[in-house]
Length: 172
Image 1 (spheres, rainbow, N blue to C red):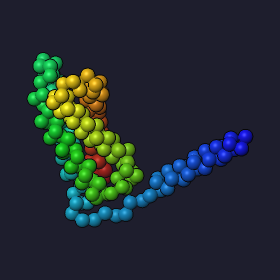
Image 2 (tube, helix red, strand yellow):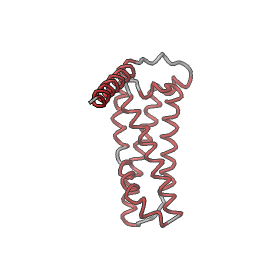
Image 3 (cartoon, rainbow, N blue to C red):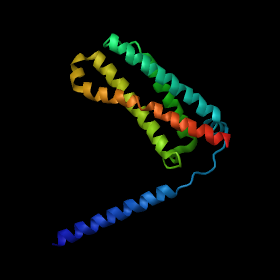
Image 4 (cartoon, one colour):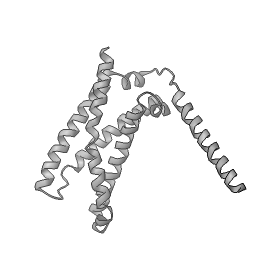
């Protein structure tokens, strides 16, 4: 019986602590950022550049899917996937350099978390593809997760919604 009371009290304290932490995170306000990198990252041109990269990636994904249907196992597009991964990694790294951890608690936190998740998923997918290419016996173990992660890449165009929102903000 005493154990139940302690467990119940611990659970309530834990929930209260988590709630307070979340309230604190939501209440954080990022200080004004200045400098060349901050101006670049927060510029309309930066948003448009990465919007164009997303569109180029969409086109590449479409062409790659068509090509894969005809030439199963052909890795011709692997290099382009790495190029896009580097571009997205540079984007998130530049944003992080300017905004630090506020990147994940500010008003764009959901989009920034989505971007970071896309980068991590793409990195894992690309590395698994290399691992499978080098060691064919690994293919069976990772084939399903690799397929799922490749499907995740299809969600990248959702970033265009963010780009359109950003350009609207710059117009007003």
